[in-house]
Length: 193
Image 1 (cartoon, rainbow, N blue to C red):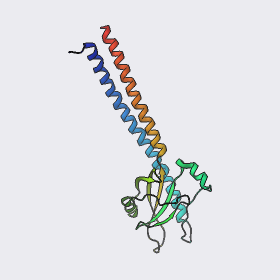
Image 2 (image 1 turned 90 degrees about the vertical axis):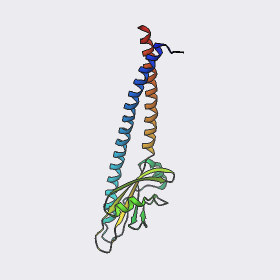
Image 3 (image 1 turned 180 degrees about the vertical axis):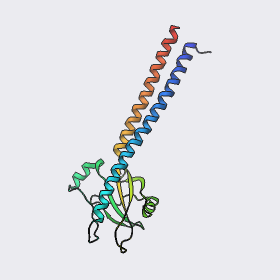
Image 4 (image 1 turned 90 degrees about the horizontal axis):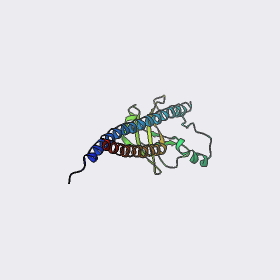
């Protein structure tokens, strides 16, 4: 049984519109994700540079982080704003970590090795079930007695992930709604001819 011409015209037009809108929505989704990732990276780089200068400025050589004076409960309530810091030796030995970190940050051996060679490196992992992105920042400490250290600063990605999920669902709904509207409109228009 052959479908009516009206249905064929309406479905082809709706499919073409859906494809075009889906392509624009996908591009918009990836642009949004890239923009959010660049903002997170810039924030982490700023925090890493502040922590690096704080850690390396003590004339005695003692390392300490610049941290907010908050209680453990306040630190937990700041959740998505927290940036966790840890210092590693070149060999991957944990030397110092933020006072609110009970466990080591997830360490990426490739990123650690790149930072040990003097380059910034980025990686993603999980910290206490939470998705985090880390920057591995090479620390320069003066004097031959100091081996190279690497500062790792991790930021939770839960807000970015939630934003991307919401944007993705909105864009899918938008594509479906526009597709349905174009089908109904082209069905009506094909009936007028």
